[in-house]
Amino acid sequence: MRARLLSLLLGLALVSSGVISGVSSGAEDEISKARRGLYGTPVVGPVSLTNSSRIDSLYRAGNLYLSLRDAIALAIENNLDVEFQRLNAPIAQTDTLRAKGGGTLRGISTSIDEVPPGLGGPGAPLVTAAATGNIGNTALAAYTSDLSIITEPPLNNSILPPAAYASGPPIPAFDPALTGTSEYLHSTTLEASPLTTGLPTLTEGAVTNNLGYSQGFGPGTQLNVGFNNVYTNAVSERNLYNPYTASSLGINITQPLLRGFGIALNRRFIRIAKNDEKINDLVFKEQLISTVSGVIRLYQDLVALDEDIANRRETLALAQRLFEDNHNKVQAGTLAPVEETRAQAQVASARQDLINAQGFADQQELIVKSVITRRFTADPMVRSAHIVPTDTLDVPDSQPEPAIDDLLASASKNRPDLLYAGIQVDNSRIYLEGSKNQLKPELDLVGTAQNNGLAGSLDPLYNPGSSVGAPTPPVLEGGYGDVLGQIARRAYPTYGIGLNLTLPLRNRVAEADVVRDEYQVRQTEVNRQRLVNSVRLEVESALVSLNRARDAYAAAVEVRKLQEQSLEIEQERYQVGLSTTFLVLQYQSFLAQARSTEIAARGTYAKSRTALDRAVGFTLEDNGVSVADAYKGIGRR
Image (cartoon, rainbow, N blue to C red; front, side, top):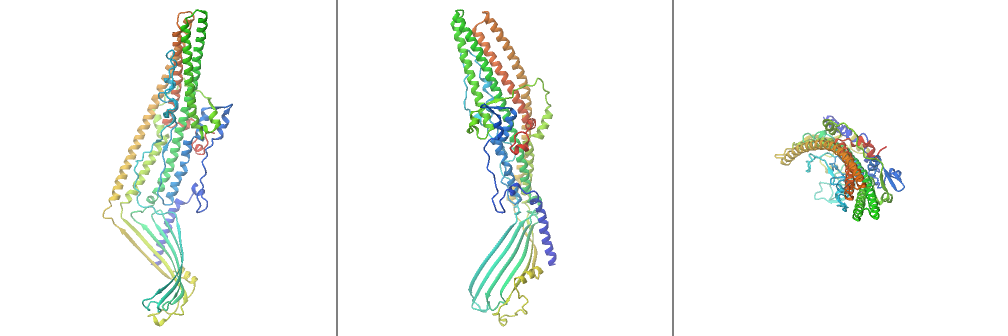
């Protein structure tokens, strides 16, 4: 019977140990690798706030010659939003490490930071600033430091409800622990009756050295092992041995059978933490998509603004030539002085438009620098460098319109927010498993097995006549080795097995938690569908915007061509005296505005293409960005 009980308890411990070994064995966590010794603090390296070396290779004569490819690479390597998300990877791993040790989760962040919109959003000055629409008027900037163009609120696509889920039954402490006690105690006790010791006082010295081991396992098993040793030297006529050593080696195992039982239940936080690592990877990818899309958009706007500067310069040159022509005619007496004044006012207006255009480009350039560098203008080279975009904005002559069903199918497979929304639904259901288990009664199987040993020297003060039924012969005479031998032979065992039952007559807390968590699971399912609908709306709207942008660009090109023809005709009429300075200036203004509108339309098409790529999830693939390389801080190879 004793052997069978010990086999049962030890077998349960071995099974439990095997179960949990599947959790703690295998590839060691990177966090554990960084630990300095068993009790040392893990090493966390400092953050780098210096720019990658790529930017140094792009400087030429005080200018930063920047292609779109290089802008994307610099953003991946230097952008602080990306770096912030990069640091969330080891943070997510810490939750997995906590869960493997039996701890609760601290959670991860699913927020990403958007790139500032810059000067290319709705109401952009590129479109709304009239190019000398009225003679003598200038277009002044309506804002110079509007926060809406240099900041963007964070985006969080998490579908989990704000309220926390119930924690469920406690998780066993999977990390093993050793405990030890070493103590010396001397006592002198007055005895009320000489029957206890045979003497009026009990003088006793004891040395205690105990060692314990505890560990929890996957099925909910709690193992406690104790090795206890007490060396006693007592002055007493009743002790057969003095000094003597008493030792015991015991195992206590508690196995929940209802509440708290099950490998899946007790590893639920490990499963959630592993899912959170996947979510974190997807959030990092979402941040990459956001940053790369934002950099592309800012770059496209910078190109458009630079093109508009060239347009404003040409408009100023036209106005300057007309003014000089009128000035010469006035000097020759063939033209009224008022015509020279009108032309001069047009020159001033065109110059103001050029100043505005240059200011817009300078401000956009600052925003681009803030996205592709780590220290922004604290770096003297970055502050003084002028960005020269080396790519242009092109609109393909023809492009097949993608099928909306294909785009939606691609979005469902590629969008990180949709992918991690599904994982969050799974996590909410795992939490619910713990809540439901809390409804069960507590029924624990408890087993105890202990081997005892005692040995010492015969006490010369021992008086056999003073004790009734004094033991003979002294079979326990010996030293500490004899004690260990008795334990090893299981000469004096103690064992037992039983059940502990706690049966709640009411369990309203658990009932409330289950109902609430059930509803929160429903909320995550609803939120996921809302996200699906939002993605569909985003994809379809982006496709509509792309088609509209193409049509608008075609119309803008046609308008610009007609305005060029109109100005040419009006200049010919002016040369033969059939037109006026006022009409020539007006047609110059119309042409300048038509050219600006064409530039803006070309930029709008490019940004619409970028927005569609982001909506579908093609941004990284189309621009050759590797998520694995981005994790390492490598932009593009």
